[in-house]
Image (tube, rainbow, N blue to C red; front, top):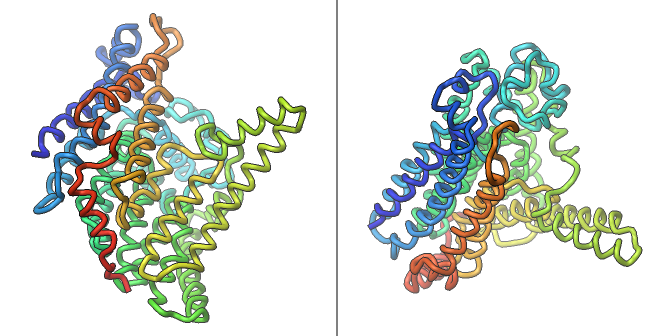
Length: 498
Protein backbone atom coordinates (compact mmCIF):
# COMPACT_ATOMS: atom_id res chain seq x y z
CA UNK A 1 0.00 0.00 0.00
CA UNK A 2 2.92 2.33 -0.62
CA UNK A 3 1.58 3.70 -3.88
CA UNK A 4 -0.83 6.35 -2.51
CA UNK A 5 2.17 8.01 -0.88
CA UNK A 6 4.17 7.70 -4.11
CA UNK A 7 1.40 9.36 -6.13
CA UNK A 8 1.04 12.12 -3.55
CA UNK A 9 4.77 12.82 -3.75
CA UNK A 10 4.60 12.84 -7.55
CA UNK A 11 1.86 15.48 -7.30
CA UNK A 12 4.07 17.49 -4.96
CA UNK A 13 6.93 17.33 -7.46
CA UNK A 14 4.59 18.47 -10.23
CA UNK A 15 3.56 21.42 -8.07
CA UNK A 16 7.23 22.28 -7.57
CA UNK A 17 7.84 22.01 -11.31
CA UNK A 18 4.96 24.39 -12.06
CA UNK A 19 5.96 26.81 -9.32
CA UNK A 20 9.58 26.87 -10.45
CA UNK A 21 8.58 28.41 -13.78
CA UNK A 22 7.42 31.57 -12.03
CA UNK A 23 9.98 31.97 -9.24
CA UNK A 24 12.85 29.62 -10.07
CA UNK A 25 16.21 30.83 -11.30
CA UNK A 26 16.21 31.42 -15.07
CA UNK A 27 19.34 32.88 -16.67
CA UNK A 28 18.89 36.29 -18.26
CA UNK A 29 20.32 34.87 -21.45
CA UNK A 30 17.81 32.03 -21.64
CA UNK A 31 15.28 32.05 -24.52
CA UNK A 32 12.81 30.53 -22.04
CA UNK A 33 12.42 33.94 -20.47
CA UNK A 34 10.69 35.21 -23.62
CA UNK A 35 7.99 32.53 -23.67
CA UNK A 36 4.47 34.04 -23.19
CA UNK A 37 3.57 31.69 -20.30
CA UNK A 38 6.86 32.35 -18.56
CA UNK A 39 6.43 36.10 -19.05
CA UNK A 40 2.97 35.99 -17.48
CA UNK A 41 4.09 33.92 -14.51
CA UNK A 42 7.17 36.05 -13.83
CA UNK A 43 5.87 39.60 -14.48
CA UNK A 44 2.32 39.50 -13.13
CA UNK A 45 1.57 39.62 -9.41
CA UNK A 46 -0.86 36.73 -9.63
CA UNK A 47 1.72 34.66 -11.52
CA UNK A 48 4.57 34.93 -9.03
CA UNK A 49 2.19 34.57 -6.08
CA UNK A 50 0.63 31.42 -7.51
CA UNK A 51 4.10 30.07 -8.29
CA UNK A 52 5.30 30.69 -4.73
CA UNK A 53 2.26 28.88 -3.32
CA UNK A 54 2.71 25.92 -5.69
CA UNK A 55 6.41 25.60 -4.95
CA UNK A 56 5.93 25.70 -1.18
CA UNK A 57 2.91 23.40 -1.05
CA UNK A 58 4.66 20.98 -3.41
CA UNK A 59 7.78 20.85 -1.23
CA UNK A 60 5.72 20.22 1.90
CA UNK A 61 3.67 17.56 0.10
CA UNK A 62 6.97 15.82 -0.60
CA UNK A 63 7.75 15.94 3.12
CA UNK A 64 4.39 14.36 3.98
CA UNK A 65 4.72 11.77 1.22
CA UNK A 66 8.14 10.75 2.51
CA UNK A 67 6.80 10.33 6.04
CA UNK A 68 3.74 8.42 4.88
CA UNK A 69 5.81 6.19 2.59
CA UNK A 70 7.84 5.08 5.59
CA UNK A 71 4.67 4.40 7.57
CA UNK A 72 3.04 2.47 4.76
CA UNK A 73 6.03 0.16 4.41
CA UNK A 74 5.04 -1.34 7.77
CA UNK A 75 7.51 -4.05 8.77
CA UNK A 76 9.82 -3.50 5.77
CA UNK A 77 9.59 -7.22 4.99
CA UNK A 78 9.31 -8.76 1.54
CA UNK A 79 10.17 -6.82 -1.60
CA UNK A 80 10.19 -3.44 0.14
CA UNK A 81 13.02 -2.04 -1.97
CA UNK A 82 10.96 -1.75 -5.16
CA UNK A 83 8.42 0.82 -3.85
CA UNK A 84 11.23 3.01 -2.51
CA UNK A 85 13.01 2.97 -5.86
CA UNK A 86 9.73 3.78 -7.62
CA UNK A 87 9.17 6.68 -5.22
CA UNK A 88 12.63 8.11 -5.88
CA UNK A 89 12.11 7.82 -9.64
CA UNK A 90 8.59 9.29 -9.61
CA UNK A 91 9.47 12.18 -7.31
CA UNK A 92 12.66 12.99 -9.22
CA UNK A 93 11.16 13.06 -12.71
CA UNK A 94 9.32 16.43 -12.55
CA UNK A 95 12.25 17.97 -10.64
CA UNK A 96 14.61 16.87 -13.40
CA UNK A 97 12.93 19.36 -15.76
CA UNK A 98 12.11 22.12 -13.27
CA UNK A 99 13.72 25.53 -13.32
CA UNK A 100 16.48 25.52 -10.65
CA UNK A 101 15.07 26.24 -7.19
CA UNK A 102 16.51 26.55 -3.67
CA UNK A 103 19.91 27.42 -5.22
CA UNK A 104 21.40 28.77 -8.43
CA UNK A 105 24.88 27.31 -8.01
CA UNK A 106 24.36 25.32 -11.18
CA UNK A 107 24.77 28.53 -13.19
CA UNK A 108 28.16 29.09 -11.57
CA UNK A 109 29.14 25.69 -12.98
CA UNK A 110 28.51 27.06 -16.47
CA UNK A 111 30.70 30.07 -15.79
CA UNK A 112 33.52 27.90 -14.50
CA UNK A 113 33.16 25.73 -17.59
CA UNK A 114 33.59 28.84 -19.72
CA UNK A 115 36.72 29.71 -17.76
CA UNK A 116 38.10 26.27 -18.60
CA UNK A 117 37.16 26.68 -22.26
CA UNK A 118 39.04 29.98 -22.39
CA UNK A 119 42.16 28.52 -20.77
CA UNK A 120 41.72 30.32 -17.44
CA UNK A 121 42.23 28.66 -14.06
CA UNK A 122 39.10 28.62 -11.84
CA UNK A 123 41.40 28.10 -8.83
CA UNK A 124 42.89 31.57 -9.29
CA UNK A 125 40.15 33.71 -10.87
CA UNK A 126 36.39 34.13 -10.56
CA UNK A 127 33.87 34.24 -13.37
CA UNK A 128 33.93 38.06 -13.48
CA UNK A 129 36.80 37.76 -15.98
CA UNK A 130 34.29 36.41 -18.51
CA UNK A 131 32.48 38.73 -20.88
CA UNK A 132 28.73 38.93 -20.24
CA UNK A 133 29.08 36.53 -17.27
CA UNK A 134 26.00 37.83 -15.50
CA UNK A 135 23.65 36.70 -18.29
CA UNK A 136 24.47 33.08 -17.41
CA UNK A 137 22.44 33.39 -14.21
CA UNK A 138 25.21 32.94 -11.64
CA UNK A 139 24.96 34.51 -8.21
CA UNK A 140 27.21 37.62 -8.05
CA UNK A 141 28.87 36.01 -5.02
CA UNK A 142 30.70 33.81 -7.54
CA UNK A 143 32.02 36.79 -9.50
CA UNK A 144 35.38 36.98 -7.70
CA UNK A 145 35.27 33.61 -5.89
CA UNK A 146 37.72 30.83 -6.69
CA UNK A 147 36.12 27.47 -7.26
CA UNK A 148 36.12 25.07 -4.28
CA UNK A 149 35.64 22.05 -6.54
CA UNK A 150 38.03 19.29 -7.49
CA UNK A 151 39.63 18.77 -10.92
CA UNK A 152 37.19 16.09 -12.04
CA UNK A 153 34.21 18.37 -11.68
CA UNK A 154 36.09 21.08 -13.56
CA UNK A 155 36.54 18.55 -16.35
CA UNK A 156 32.80 17.91 -16.27
CA UNK A 157 32.06 21.64 -16.43
CA UNK A 158 34.43 21.97 -19.38
CA UNK A 159 32.72 19.07 -21.18
CA UNK A 160 29.22 20.42 -20.60
CA UNK A 161 30.09 23.89 -21.91
CA UNK A 162 31.95 22.36 -24.87
CA UNK A 163 28.77 20.44 -25.77
CA UNK A 164 26.25 23.22 -25.17
CA UNK A 165 28.24 26.32 -26.04
CA UNK A 166 27.23 27.65 -22.60
CA UNK A 167 23.53 27.69 -23.57
CA UNK A 168 22.09 27.90 -20.03
CA UNK A 169 18.99 25.71 -20.28
CA UNK A 170 20.66 22.75 -21.97
CA UNK A 171 23.66 23.14 -19.66
CA UNK A 172 21.40 22.95 -16.59
CA UNK A 173 19.82 19.77 -17.96
CA UNK A 174 23.23 18.14 -18.51
CA UNK A 175 24.40 19.08 -15.02
CA UNK A 176 21.15 17.62 -13.70
CA UNK A 177 21.84 14.37 -15.53
CA UNK A 178 25.31 14.26 -13.97
CA UNK A 179 23.75 14.82 -10.53
CA UNK A 180 21.19 12.11 -11.31
CA UNK A 181 24.12 9.76 -11.89
CA UNK A 182 25.20 10.44 -8.31
CA UNK A 183 21.67 9.75 -7.09
CA UNK A 184 21.69 6.48 -9.04
CA UNK A 185 24.95 5.44 -7.37
CA UNK A 186 23.29 6.02 -3.99
CA UNK A 187 20.25 3.99 -5.06
CA UNK A 188 22.54 1.12 -6.05
CA UNK A 189 24.98 1.10 -3.13
CA UNK A 190 23.10 2.42 -0.09
CA UNK A 191 21.04 -0.81 0.21
CA UNK A 192 24.12 -2.98 -0.35
CA UNK A 193 26.16 -1.11 2.24
CA UNK A 194 23.24 -1.28 4.69
CA UNK A 195 22.91 -5.04 4.31
CA UNK A 196 26.59 -5.41 5.24
CA UNK A 197 25.68 -3.89 8.59
CA UNK A 198 22.54 -5.95 9.11
CA UNK A 199 20.31 -2.95 8.33
CA UNK A 200 17.28 -3.20 6.07
CA UNK A 201 18.43 -1.77 2.73
CA UNK A 202 15.03 -0.42 1.73
CA UNK A 203 14.66 1.51 4.97
CA UNK A 204 18.18 2.93 4.61
CA UNK A 205 17.36 4.01 1.06
CA UNK A 206 14.12 5.63 2.23
CA UNK A 207 16.01 7.57 4.90
CA UNK A 208 18.97 8.61 2.78
CA UNK A 209 17.72 9.10 -0.78
CA UNK A 210 13.91 9.29 -0.84
CA UNK A 211 13.86 12.17 1.64
CA UNK A 212 12.71 15.45 0.07
CA UNK A 213 15.80 17.45 1.00
CA UNK A 214 17.98 14.96 -0.91
CA UNK A 215 15.82 15.09 -4.05
CA UNK A 216 15.33 18.85 -4.00
CA UNK A 217 19.03 19.59 -3.38
CA UNK A 218 20.49 16.98 -5.70
CA UNK A 219 17.93 16.93 -8.53
CA UNK A 220 16.05 20.26 -8.53
CA UNK A 221 19.10 22.30 -7.49
CA UNK A 222 21.54 20.03 -9.39
CA UNK A 223 24.26 20.35 -6.75
CA UNK A 224 27.45 18.51 -7.63
CA UNK A 225 27.38 17.12 -4.08
CA UNK A 226 25.16 14.39 -5.53
CA UNK A 227 28.09 13.04 -7.57
CA UNK A 228 30.43 13.44 -4.60
CA UNK A 229 28.15 11.50 -2.24
CA UNK A 230 27.34 8.81 -4.80
CA UNK A 231 31.02 8.09 -5.47
CA UNK A 232 31.80 8.17 -1.73
CA UNK A 233 29.06 5.64 -0.92
CA UNK A 234 30.15 3.36 -3.76
CA UNK A 235 33.80 3.61 -2.72
CA UNK A 236 32.95 2.79 0.89
CA UNK A 237 31.01 -0.28 -0.21
CA UNK A 238 33.93 -1.64 -2.25
CA UNK A 239 36.40 -0.93 0.56
CA UNK A 240 34.10 -2.67 3.05
CA UNK A 241 33.92 -5.75 0.82
CA UNK A 242 37.71 -6.21 0.66
CA UNK A 243 38.28 -4.41 -2.63
CA UNK A 244 40.31 -1.51 -1.22
CA UNK A 245 41.93 -0.29 -4.44
CA UNK A 246 38.57 0.21 -6.14
CA UNK A 247 37.30 1.85 -2.97
CA UNK A 248 40.25 4.25 -2.82
CA UNK A 249 39.89 5.19 -6.49
CA UNK A 250 36.15 5.85 -6.14
CA UNK A 251 36.65 7.96 -3.03
CA UNK A 252 39.48 9.77 -4.85
CA UNK A 253 37.01 10.49 -7.65
CA UNK A 254 34.66 11.87 -4.98
CA UNK A 255 37.45 14.13 -3.68
CA UNK A 256 37.95 15.23 -7.29
CA UNK A 257 34.38 16.52 -7.25
CA UNK A 258 34.46 18.23 -3.83
CA UNK A 259 37.54 17.82 -1.61
CA UNK A 260 35.62 17.48 1.68
CA UNK A 261 35.48 13.69 1.24
CA UNK A 262 39.23 13.53 1.87
CA UNK A 263 37.92 12.90 5.39
CA UNK A 264 36.92 9.37 4.31
CA UNK A 265 40.43 8.23 3.35
CA UNK A 266 41.67 7.30 6.85
CA UNK A 267 38.61 5.12 7.41
CA UNK A 268 38.97 3.52 3.98
CA UNK A 269 42.53 2.74 5.06
CA UNK A 270 41.26 1.08 8.24
CA UNK A 271 39.00 -1.19 6.16
CA UNK A 272 42.00 -2.10 4.03
CA UNK A 273 44.15 -2.82 7.09
CA UNK A 274 41.55 -5.27 8.40
CA UNK A 275 40.45 -6.39 11.84
CA UNK A 276 43.21 -6.80 14.41
CA UNK A 277 45.75 -4.83 12.40
CA UNK A 278 48.75 -3.58 14.37
CA UNK A 279 49.48 0.13 14.61
CA UNK A 280 52.52 -0.09 12.31
CA UNK A 281 50.29 -1.79 9.70
CA UNK A 282 47.59 0.86 10.12
CA UNK A 283 50.06 3.70 9.66
CA UNK A 284 51.58 1.94 6.67
CA UNK A 285 48.17 1.44 5.07
CA UNK A 286 47.22 5.05 5.79
CA UNK A 287 50.38 6.18 4.03
CA UNK A 288 49.65 3.89 1.06
CA UNK A 289 46.04 5.09 0.87
CA UNK A 290 47.08 8.74 0.92
CA UNK A 291 49.86 8.05 -1.58
CA UNK A 292 47.54 6.37 -4.09
CA UNK A 293 44.79 8.98 -3.74
CA UNK A 294 46.95 12.10 -3.79
CA UNK A 295 49.15 10.64 -6.51
CA UNK A 296 46.12 10.14 -8.75
CA UNK A 297 44.87 13.64 -7.95
CA UNK A 298 48.30 15.14 -8.65
CA UNK A 299 48.40 13.51 -12.08
CA UNK A 300 44.81 14.63 -12.68
CA UNK A 301 45.83 18.23 -12.10
CA UNK A 302 48.34 18.23 -14.95
CA UNK A 303 45.76 18.66 -17.77
CA UNK A 304 44.66 22.31 -18.09
CA UNK A 305 47.42 23.29 -15.64
CA UNK A 306 45.17 22.91 -12.59
CA UNK A 307 47.84 21.42 -10.33
CA UNK A 308 46.74 20.86 -6.74
CA UNK A 309 44.68 24.03 -6.66
CA UNK A 310 41.78 22.23 -5.00
CA UNK A 311 43.74 22.02 -1.75
CA UNK A 312 42.88 25.65 -0.96
CA UNK A 313 39.24 24.62 -0.41
CA UNK A 314 40.36 22.61 2.63
CA UNK A 315 43.13 24.84 3.95
CA UNK A 316 41.38 28.20 3.39
CA UNK A 317 37.67 27.70 4.19
CA UNK A 318 35.00 30.30 3.58
CA UNK A 319 34.91 32.90 6.38
CA UNK A 320 31.77 33.76 8.33
CA UNK A 321 28.96 31.64 9.70
CA UNK A 322 25.32 30.73 9.14
CA UNK A 323 22.86 31.64 11.87
CA UNK A 324 21.25 28.21 11.96
CA UNK A 325 24.47 26.23 12.43
CA UNK A 326 25.02 25.24 16.09
CA UNK A 327 28.19 27.31 16.39
CA UNK A 328 26.65 30.19 14.46
CA UNK A 329 23.54 30.27 16.64
CA UNK A 330 25.41 29.85 19.92
CA UNK A 331 27.97 32.43 18.83
CA UNK A 332 25.23 34.98 18.23
CA UNK A 333 23.83 34.37 21.73
CA UNK A 334 27.30 34.69 23.29
CA UNK A 335 27.93 37.88 21.35
CA UNK A 336 24.62 39.39 22.49
CA UNK A 337 25.20 38.40 26.11
CA UNK A 338 28.80 39.60 26.08
CA UNK A 339 27.89 42.97 24.61
CA UNK A 340 25.08 43.35 27.15
CA UNK A 341 27.60 42.81 29.96
CA UNK A 342 30.11 45.23 28.48
CA UNK A 343 32.43 42.44 27.32
CA UNK A 344 33.94 41.92 23.83
CA UNK A 345 31.03 39.84 22.55
CA UNK A 346 32.28 39.55 18.98
CA UNK A 347 35.66 38.19 20.09
CA UNK A 348 33.98 35.78 22.49
CA UNK A 349 31.75 34.50 19.68
CA UNK A 350 34.75 34.03 17.39
CA UNK A 351 36.52 32.02 20.08
CA UNK A 352 33.47 29.81 20.59
CA UNK A 353 33.13 29.13 16.88
CA UNK A 354 36.83 28.32 16.60
CA UNK A 355 36.66 25.97 19.58
CA UNK A 356 33.67 24.14 18.11
CA UNK A 357 35.29 23.91 14.66
CA UNK A 358 38.53 22.48 16.00
CA UNK A 359 36.53 20.30 18.36
CA UNK A 360 35.01 18.71 15.26
CA UNK A 361 38.51 18.07 13.90
CA UNK A 362 39.45 16.54 17.25
CA UNK A 363 36.48 14.19 17.12
CA UNK A 364 37.53 13.08 13.64
CA UNK A 365 40.98 12.20 14.95
CA UNK A 366 39.51 10.42 17.98
CA UNK A 367 37.23 8.30 15.77
CA UNK A 368 40.19 7.49 13.50
CA UNK A 369 42.20 6.05 16.38
CA UNK A 370 39.53 4.62 18.70
CA UNK A 371 36.68 2.17 18.14
CA UNK A 372 35.82 -1.33 17.02
CA UNK A 373 36.85 -2.34 13.53
CA UNK A 374 33.36 -3.76 12.87
CA UNK A 375 31.99 -0.22 13.33
CA UNK A 376 34.48 1.59 11.13
CA UNK A 377 31.80 2.85 8.71
CA UNK A 378 29.78 4.10 11.67
CA UNK A 379 32.85 5.85 13.02
CA UNK A 380 33.35 7.43 9.62
CA UNK A 381 29.73 8.61 9.57
CA UNK A 382 30.04 10.14 13.03
CA UNK A 383 33.31 11.83 12.08
CA UNK A 384 31.70 13.31 8.97
CA UNK A 385 28.70 14.47 11.01
CA UNK A 386 30.90 16.05 13.66
CA UNK A 387 32.95 17.98 11.11
CA UNK A 388 29.82 19.30 9.38
CA UNK A 389 27.67 20.06 12.41
CA UNK A 390 30.43 21.81 14.36
CA UNK A 391 31.49 23.98 11.42
CA UNK A 392 30.40 27.62 11.45
CA UNK A 393 28.90 27.38 7.95
CA UNK A 394 26.27 24.76 7.15
CA UNK A 395 24.33 24.86 3.91
CA UNK A 396 21.05 22.86 3.84
CA UNK A 397 22.50 20.13 1.63
CA UNK A 398 25.59 19.64 3.82
CA UNK A 399 23.73 17.26 6.12
CA UNK A 400 23.19 15.02 3.10
CA UNK A 401 26.92 14.35 3.06
CA UNK A 402 26.75 12.14 6.14
CA UNK A 403 23.11 11.01 6.39
CA UNK A 404 23.62 8.09 3.94
CA UNK A 405 26.47 6.72 6.09
CA UNK A 406 24.38 7.02 9.25
CA UNK A 407 21.44 5.37 7.48
CA UNK A 408 23.46 2.33 6.36
CA UNK A 409 24.81 1.79 9.87
CA UNK A 410 21.47 2.27 11.60
CA UNK A 411 19.22 5.16 12.62
CA UNK A 412 16.86 4.10 15.38
CA UNK A 413 13.13 4.91 15.49
CA UNK A 414 13.46 7.19 18.49
CA UNK A 415 15.13 10.57 19.01
CA UNK A 416 17.50 9.75 16.15
CA UNK A 417 14.77 9.58 13.51
CA UNK A 418 12.93 12.50 15.06
CA UNK A 419 16.10 14.58 14.78
CA UNK A 420 16.28 13.69 11.10
CA UNK A 421 12.60 14.59 10.60
CA UNK A 422 13.24 17.97 12.21
CA UNK A 423 16.41 18.60 10.20
CA UNK A 424 14.89 17.67 6.84
CA UNK A 425 11.67 19.61 7.47
CA UNK A 426 13.55 22.66 8.75
CA UNK A 427 15.73 22.91 5.67
CA UNK A 428 12.81 22.29 3.30
CA UNK A 429 10.86 25.07 5.05
CA UNK A 430 13.93 27.32 5.08
CA UNK A 431 14.67 26.73 1.41
CA UNK A 432 11.09 27.39 0.34
CA UNK A 433 11.44 31.06 1.29
CA UNK A 434 15.19 31.58 1.10
CA UNK A 435 15.84 32.01 -2.62
CA UNK A 436 12.95 33.17 -4.76
CA UNK A 437 13.74 34.78 -8.09
CA UNK A 438 11.32 37.71 -8.38
CA UNK A 439 12.05 40.81 -10.44
CA UNK A 440 11.98 44.03 -8.44
CA UNK A 441 9.43 45.71 -10.69
CA UNK A 442 6.77 43.02 -10.12
CA UNK A 443 3.98 44.33 -7.91
CA UNK A 444 2.68 41.87 -5.33
CA UNK A 445 0.28 42.43 -2.46
CA UNK A 446 2.35 40.43 0.04
CA UNK A 447 6.05 39.67 0.48
CA UNK A 448 6.51 36.33 -1.25
CA UNK A 449 9.23 35.07 1.09
CA UNK A 450 6.97 35.73 4.07
CA UNK A 451 4.05 34.07 2.28
CA UNK A 452 6.09 30.95 1.46
CA UNK A 453 7.45 30.80 5.01
CA UNK A 454 3.94 31.12 6.50
CA UNK A 455 2.55 28.38 4.23
CA UNK A 456 5.43 26.04 5.06
CA UNK A 457 5.07 26.67 8.80
CA UNK A 458 1.30 26.09 8.68
CA UNK A 459 1.86 22.85 6.76
CA UNK A 460 4.45 21.77 9.32
CA UNK A 461 1.98 22.59 12.11
CA UNK A 462 -0.60 20.45 10.32
CA UNK A 463 1.83 17.53 10.08
CA UNK A 464 2.72 17.68 13.77
CA UNK A 465 -0.63 18.42 15.37
CA UNK A 466 -3.55 17.79 12.99
CA UNK A 467 -2.68 15.01 10.56
CA UNK A 468 -3.70 11.78 12.33
CA UNK A 469 -1.01 9.79 10.53
CA UNK A 470 2.06 12.01 10.67
CA UNK A 471 1.17 13.32 14.14
CA UNK A 472 1.64 9.87 15.60
CA UNK A 473 4.94 9.49 13.77
CA UNK A 474 6.40 12.89 14.65
CA UNK A 475 5.23 13.00 18.26
CA UNK A 476 5.88 9.36 19.18
CA UNK A 477 8.88 9.03 16.86
CA UNK A 478 8.10 5.53 15.55
CA UNK A 479 6.81 4.22 12.25
CA UNK A 480 5.22 1.46 14.29
CA UNK A 481 5.97 -0.46 17.45
CA UNK A 482 6.97 -3.57 15.49
CA UNK A 483 9.42 -1.68 13.29
CA UNK A 484 11.09 -0.11 16.31
CA UNK A 485 11.68 -3.54 17.83
CA UNK A 486 12.87 -4.94 14.53
CA UNK A 487 15.36 -2.14 14.06
CA UNK A 488 16.83 -2.78 17.48
CA UNK A 489 17.27 -6.42 16.54
CA UNK A 490 18.91 -5.46 13.24
CA UNK A 491 21.19 -2.93 14.85
CA UNK A 492 22.58 -5.60 17.13
CA UNK A 493 23.09 -8.21 14.43
CA UNK A 494 26.85 -8.71 13.94
CA UNK A 495 27.97 -6.90 10.77
CA UNK A 496 29.70 -8.84 8.02
CA UNK A 497 32.55 -6.33 7.62
CA UNK A 498 35.84 -7.83 8.75
